[in-house]
Image 1 (cartoon, rainbow, N blue to C red):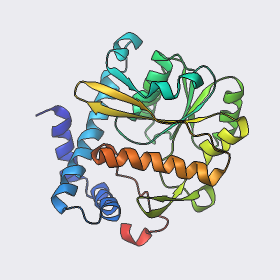
Image 2 (image 1 turned 180 degrees about the horizontal axis):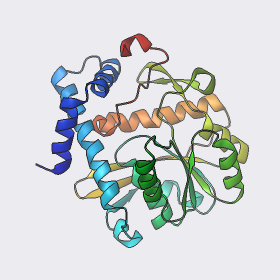
Image 3 (image 1 turned 135 degrees about the horizontal axis):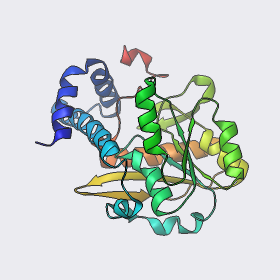
Image 4 (image 1 turned 30 degrees about the vertical axis):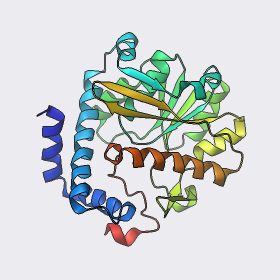
Amino acid sequence: MSLSKIIGNVLYLLDKRRKKIIFTNLDLVFPDMPKNKKIEIAKKVYENFAFNLLELIKNRNLSADDLKKKIEFVGMEKVEKYLNKPAIFITAHYGNWEIIPWVLGGILNIPMTIVVRDLDNKLVNYFVKTSREKYNIKTVNKKGALKKLISDIKKGRSIGILVDQNTARKEGEDVIMFGLKALHTPSAALLSKRFKIPIIPVFVQRDKDKYKFIFKEPIIEEDIKKSVQKQSDVIEEMIRQKPEEWFWFHRRFKHYYEDRYE
């Protein structure tokens, strides 16, 4: 049994609060799914969480050449013409999302600024921050990030944003995800419209000892509501492919289904 599976099994047994959120989300999204299948997915979520953490530690000092050996690009032809100028790369807490900036910066030589949430523990935050900031990658805290992102786009940098979490009512746009109402951050859509640059969805799936680095069709849409819905749709598409690879820990549908999380 792998170390990530052992850690995942322990976390599954001990972490009652987040486990409840996982099952609430699965019940909302897949109401007809058998209970044993939901348990299987939940255990995999914890295993993937442990795997990603171990990979962050293991790959901290990995060279770009060694990283390249682990990557299989899928859909590159959809985005090649956009990779030599600023773009907005969006993704979800899916697969091993942490390596996305490394691949974009280290292998494709794209100067990146990524939006993150600083961690409460200063020592852990320092470790994660310095691990992320390789290959001309710059991190900015999500709080008050917009001005910095605008400045960096003007300097020729691309932007990376995770767009799959719930937002405050005043900050989000309504979308339909899995047939449910949810709120979606409009940040990528607003920046795309302002600078007339594409939104490029990108995801990483585990595939044995390699990673599939998947580029989806760029989103070029001036209508903010249509843009955020397209972003939500592509995330839903990926989750349906491999639901065990999404980070089901977040209260994604909390604003409209708050009572289900109680």
